[in-house]
Image 1 (cartoon, rainbow, N blue to C red):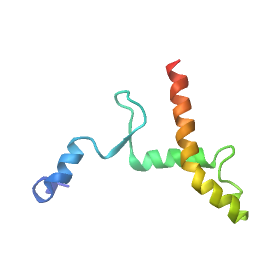
Image 2 (tube, rainbow, N blue to C red; image 1 turned 180 degrees about the vertical axis):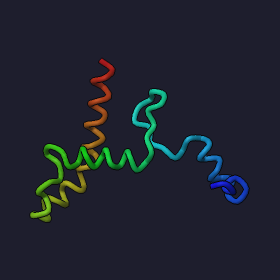
Image 3 (cartoon, rainbow, N blue to C red; image 1 turned 30 degrees about the horizontal axis):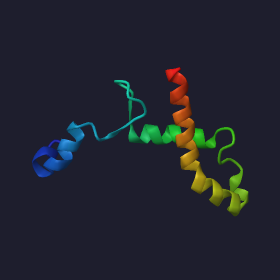
Image 4 (cartoon, one colour; image 1 turned 90 degrees about the horizontal axis):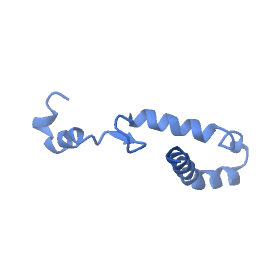
Length: 85
């Protein structure tokens, strides 16, 4: 990391622009490290109605794998809209 700016200046510029975190809201200081955001998504996925127990049926698991990320996005959008009200 110490020599990143001299060896790979394009990557160093991305880091300086904040492109190493996930922004869950437009609020200042709400950015999360990518691995932490991934863990939060895992918690949502394994919660009520999530992936637990789906490994016994390959058809159900495949259906969940295809729709899961979109369902997570919809839930997050709904939660954000509730905060604005």
